[in-house]
Length: 269
Image 1 (cartoon, helix red, strand yellow):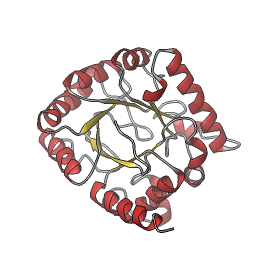
Image 2: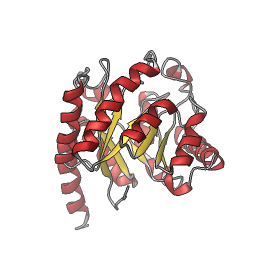
Image 3: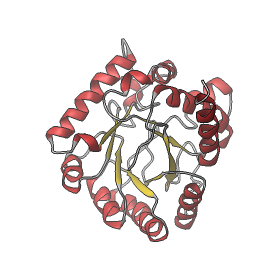
Image 4: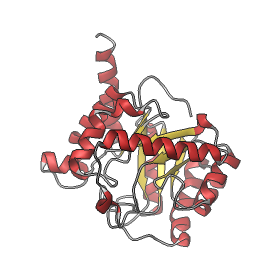
């Protein structure tokens, strides 16, 4: 996966019936495949396919359910496209199946803590892996959103997660980190992380996923879903300014256009 001076765009394909952000819009298999291909046409460098909701309070699905949701979608995207495919999963069995079906990247919201086999898998396959910061799990994380300085503490914990992955055999150049906007974070924590995300880029290439999240709705008063697209672009601007390598978004076309214009303006500064 080639990274550039400006963030590349990762399009989100939730193959779930209960995502807070898209209301299950891509739950049907063919709809998910079509959405991923449309995201590529709109400028996404990566499409991120996930079969388990990790919204606050989410109940885990079985491995069998997750495999049934994710694997055929990855397989069909790969048959039709060379776009980089990320599998959004906490489970090594799902990651194995997705990689075998043509995925290129592991995106683990638990940063290899949920399934001990995940780090060994990433090391063995030699694939890029995104390690996201979260305390607890989706059912408990918001009770653990207590920090003295959220940016320094998230940075320290991400550094520890990165070092653990390296000890497990993952090549340092294959590790990206994600501060986990909305995961064990309050509204204020999310804003602080976006405002100061440049302080996290020395750990590893930074992935920022703030698209359509609750803090956008808190500020704008917009309901969950596409109504938060415009507000989410402000978070993309913060990620750009902070030196993020990847922005993970639902609204690919709008984000790609926004970044193109913003980069053109910045070149004139």
